Length: 180
Image (cartoon, rainbow, N blue to C red):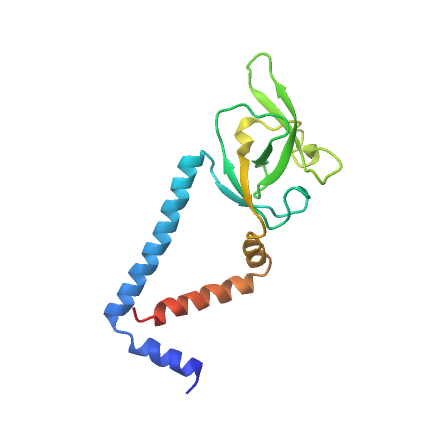
């Protein structure tokens, strides 16, 4: 009959019990992924333990599509470290290197100034209007490792949403039609 006809016949032949079994299996997979993510958040101390480099601002060290593993500790932030930070008013975190550290004499708090390795100037133009330094609460974590190119999957699915929908649909059909 053809691939589509066979798929439709397969869906029709699934018993209610099999469908329930597949739904529970899918739910367990999603739940397991969330548990792993939350466990990573607890272990690393970072609200986002894994991020994808979205631009070329950190080349040649990190290229677009690299995945960074983050860790956030109470150790002081030092110049030269690569940090991931959020800026007020922006949703997407930024990966850049700390170029200056300023310790306030009155409170002992540390403020940092960042710059992308491939950028000409510092990041003050990226910060919120009137903001000259990043504070500790802006920093999500320090880069402690990376995996090259693996993040391209995320970039492609974000830039071309049709691919994401095709992939989700194909995986959904695979779950529904499997007879395990």
